[in-house]
Length: 305
Image (spheres, rainbow, N blue to C red):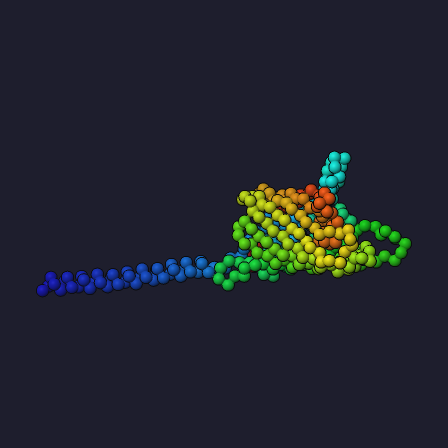
């Protein structure tokens, strides 16, 4: 009897231990599944739709991070149809030097100076919607840009009444884009440009343009880029054409090299949209390159949206 009672007691202890262990295991499994579910639903922002803040000349969906300074050199040679006498355009050079700075991860400002028309330009770029992954994320990005340019050439007729405001042009732009995969990104760039002074009576003060930019990644460090700006009809003179640029990116450490061909000599939004007059079928093509070098001036302790 005593032996039987001892066995029963041991059985009760074992049963209680088994139930306790089972409950602990189930709880642990539930916690693990909960963590996995949280991981799947975790919201992440999509980055690196483009390798630089510009597709080629036009702005891209990308921005430099908060506290980061981007020193950019944009360079264009002359037209390749100048032939051997002009070294196929290499005898001429037009350049823009620029500085872009990330105030936050959503706001970037930039300034630059172009040798073309000795123009100064500045802009502010705001990421209103950021494409993300995970539950509740938005599948595309929206970026708003506003900028101003100032013509630095001497007045053609200094004896007449010339106004400082006549040197100024303004533009507003919206970038709507999506990174479809690690290899492919696409964006639309509706733009409105206002010029206080226009060259002829044929030209409108306000110009409406629709741009498109894309990137196709070939390798880890090389990608093909293209951009095109379509100007609505009857806004500019007969000699003006739409800007089309083709090129590729090469990433090397902290540098991004962009090599490209384009019919546009201008390297800011005013010149790109309003001054382009080259024709691809006539060989009015400029070879050029962009160089970007970033410097971290202040590193935030935590990532801020």
